[in-house]
Length: 222
Length: 234
Image (tube, rainbow over all chains, first blue to last red; front, side):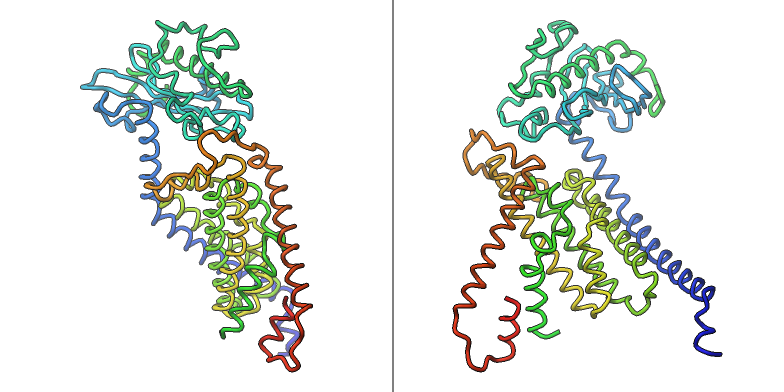
């Protein structure tokens, strides 16, 4: 057998394909092993991250249920800006409803969607709001995230805390420039307007659907 | 590997062939993530890890990789390694992972990784290749650090913002005091180009000065071989 016979097109193709397959199998195996090894830690980190966020907007002592496990899935809810669905977590104390934490989206930020988590108590007050993801201009519109807010003593997002429909009717959930009750910073009205109005809409939606939200079994789709 | 080879590899990676300033490879992360020092260095160190692992893996396997399909195999290996680094970051540096987000998977497309694998690791032994990967990566890290540090300092007046994501007990330094108004453009994407341009200019200026000084220095009659080589590099 000459040297040339061993290197026909078919043989070369089969040989390289075989080697490629071996490499693929070996490295896919390594990836799945890493995935298996990290999956529990990743799940725990994600839960901890969610809990840390919820602790900022809903006092830990105000409820006693396993909040993260007591959730309902939301489908497409235009009032909350949810086009791809979201989640609502229910806080109860001794089985009695205390508050709901809902995911909401302000679709009209300066740079697209601003994702929010809004906690609303059963008596119709905003317990807290946090921005969970946004693309607002660094140093200009990103004060909506308290981590980036220069005013450390009284971050902008805190002004929603404890506001309710009884002292702030829904029509006044706007920034001052639009005739509402809420502050904004000069030069970045759009970000503030988007968050303020989305928070107002979320408050209204939760109040309207409060009983349905608490009645649904855990894990159900609303 | 002897000392001379190690010095040469390090000098290439850190200065002469610096990926950020000379080869201009891997600009995507350089420009996108260098808004703060902590982000820049974190992504840089993740890249160092990937480059070292990729060079080690390819150099170790180089005799088993047919020449015709080397590029798909390289990409497969790099993609697998990046996935593993991505999962590891997600598991153990979760907050940092949320910030670096899309940029860790994007290390796959960072040309500097494939460039070093193809140009170096495919032709050299495992140890030398790993050192080349580390040094090239560190060359990128220091450029990212200077770039991120400058942009953060001028843009926000702080340094080490976000350090609490890695060391929870530390916090950022407000270099220009609490009331610094900020120079926004350096934090925005155009600022990345301006700052990188200034860095390259400074780099070329320093190299010019070094070359001029080397030319002025009288040449010894019979230079020892080691020095002759490093003079040729300068």
